[in-house]
Image (cartoon, rainbow, N blue to C red; front, top):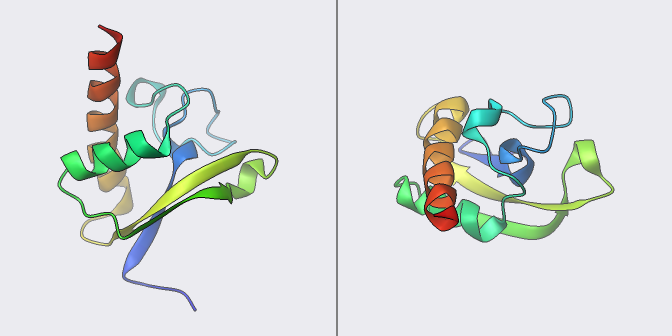
Amino acid sequence: MKDYEHFVVWLDYFNKNLTKRMGRRLPKEKCVFDPSLKELIDATKEAGIEVTESDDKVRFPRRAYVRSGYIILPKESPKNKTLFRISERLVAKRAKQSK
């Protein structure tokens, strides 16, 4: 049964290697190359959002041939705003690592 109080955030939403047709949901400047589930969870917690559940052994429907991962978040604000908040933290964290 569908849960209307949570939504799913896939790793592929933030993958800079993908096109929008393949599942990326944000502009390329707001994405990183091959994000990991741990990075996504850390960035989400830094954004002040509680992760309800996560799974790393699943496949994103548009790319069924590649293992991906997702997290489940409570609906507090629109999904797109939440994605942008998470992506800011994710990009900043990657920038720190590369320096």
